[in-house]
Image (cartoon, rainbow, N blue to C red; front, side):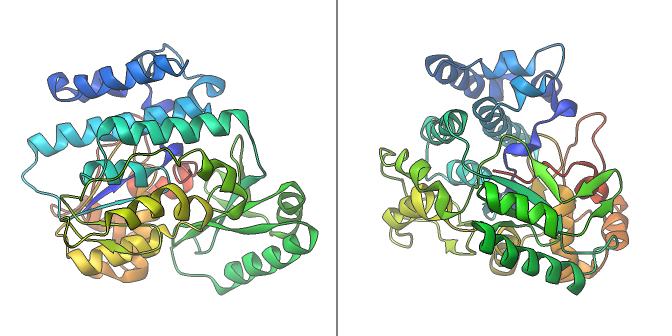
Length: 354
């Protein structure tokens, strides 16, 4: 099962990913197309961004740049891994922006079509900031679900909706991303009890992000109306509502798949944990493969596997032990300096966003 990460997965440790990737003929055509489309949109080229001498937050985390980097590097990573691997995909899932990557890799969209969606949403975010997002854990440090933390989230949402608007944006399994307008954000920050996880303090605000996956994003969905018809996927994929889209034109309602992609998931919560659980249950993969850039989503995946008790994994310690074995549950190739997957939820919390 191939998992495609969201926009927050490209950070300082990922700088220079292309130079480390190898197998250049496999990914160079993708990067060339991305560079051309970015230049046409008035953006810096992906290859130039990745080759910069220093990671600059104002440049690399710019909505349009970060979106293009994440999508292109995920597609390039898949091209390299699929050619060298002794596995074949049984299906695809994505987290937030990673849904567009999954739709491309499953055959519903060409690389260029999917990238155009990515650039439109990133460009819209560049021009507009509507509310924001923050992250809060719902499991304890050993990855056991916490009723106390979940109750704190529910209570904070109730208070925030008295002050403004707030809602679930992304359910990661062991943490939630909450989205709100400005009064709602202020209320959430005041109502959620402070929590420490390693070096990270929650609630964790996500700078430069809008209230993704909520009705506040209806204007952004309108930007996608010109998206062309989808092709029948050649591999199954599971969306952010947990719906399985089968391969083949007769089995898959491609018009409904397009509608989900350009509208429904833009304005509705993205339930990544449910998506992953559904895909594992329906597609019965032997192993999970997390695409780059980075491996920051690895901790969230491990938390879902722990909740499912998949292959005997029932805690953070059990996931770490499985990852050290000769049969890991999750295959990932983190770049130099990135945290191991078992610690990624604490060390790389931004790898979970739109």
